[in-house]
Length: 170
Ligand code: IMP
Ligand code: MG
Image (cartoon, rainbow, N blue to C red; front, top):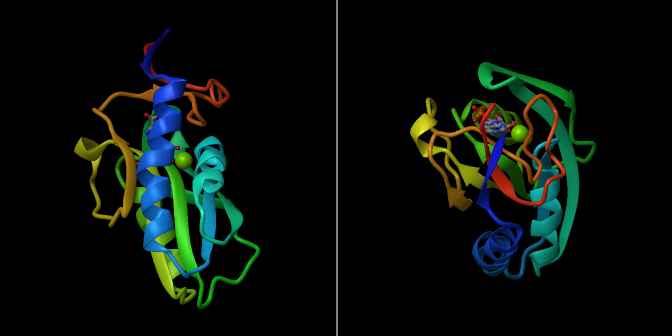
């Protein structure tokens, strides 16, 4: 069913070396407000924030635009941030960017609340699939146009807990 793509070890060293170190140096002297997009980002989020060395607070948005393996283009917010982000350095954290619709929608929504800054960090980027333009500041891995699961990512809500990233082959 699933073929291993990135091992647990590759993921761990990637998170520390790429997004976390760059974020820590870019935000030197500032405080980050990390906003995680649930459910998918939960595992990456937990790894990432523990490797960031500048002061940080966090909160979550529960949002979804995905039905099975095809995007709907429609983003549903089930639960919004509970904290006011006005004047804060917001870092939006997502598991994967595919068409870009989810992040474009959420980015615009958060910008309306006047944060001091807003940057986006994704663990996986399926660049070939992009249909809308969204500025992504930090990326873990670029991946080909294949459906992946595990490390937070799901297919029909399954496989999120597996510690590696795998291609999903039904
Ligand atoms: P976008 O709005 O098309 O960029 O889709 C982003 C969302 O689709 C992500 O937050 C994931 O929840 C989901 N998604 C996109 N590609 C995959 C995949 O390969 N596996 C699992 N979920 C995916
Ligand atoms: Mg997601």
